[in-house]
Image (cartoon, rainbow, N blue to C red):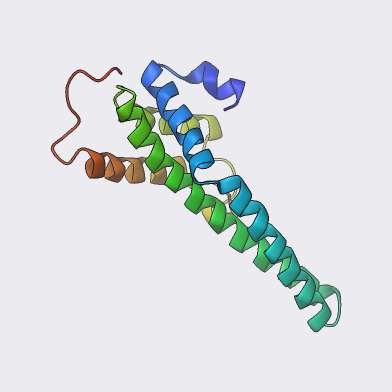
Length: 149
């Protein structure tokens, strides 16, 4: 978590959600998996360069490898958002606070940045919908009263 995001958080629940999200990356070994996949994608790009007979094949291979790698990163972000919801609630915090984190991220980006398909992170607005579904999965009867905000 960057210092800039930390300074924008409004509640302990938001901090709990961010930490739960980051712990989710560790639990799921996303860093290890991503490094392994990137090695495979680089090999694919190199093979396309050789088979393509030069620069254009290599460039196309790099573009394909980049697109596949970004998709892989977005899936990891959503998986970690799910963990954030789960761990936030288990720690006694209201997991709905994570939706507030996404609003902070959305404001910080001011709608700038690459299109979602070219980014390693899903757009915050799309993550809010995913977080809401995760909340419904873990709390089908509704989030209980008494959780800290």
